[in-house]
Length: 129
Image 1: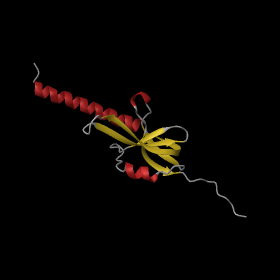
Image 2 (image 1 turned 45 degrees about the vertical axis):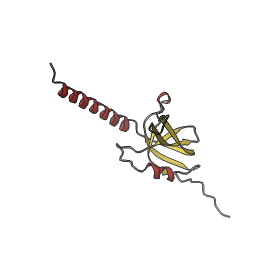
Image 3 (image 1 turned 180 degrees about the horizontal axis):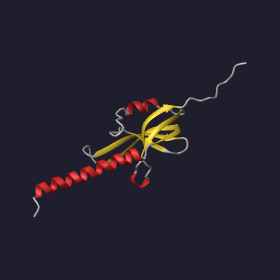
Image 4 (image 1 turned 90 degrees about the vertical axis):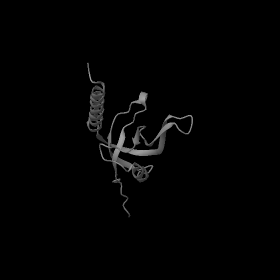
């Protein structure tokens, strides 16, 4: 009834468009600004590997003093390709204003992603007498 190769291509394109649209809506629809103080920086490794050929993913992670966690990975939608440099820029004990997107979904090991940060300067200036 259907031309099978054509039908397969159409199904693939529909699924691809659905996933792409969902990813775009998720990324832009959940973006927001947050302020946090870095408590710890680290990595989170996940995936499956019982030999050298397994698939393992490593995300840069930022843990905050108010017990939140954010991942720091590249993002196609925000044209962010310098996660390593962003991770090195953030210092433990410093406070940052950050643009993030995403939700924390513990059951699926999902964390909000940091898009950009700017250090929040303290207004506490000591006056000399």
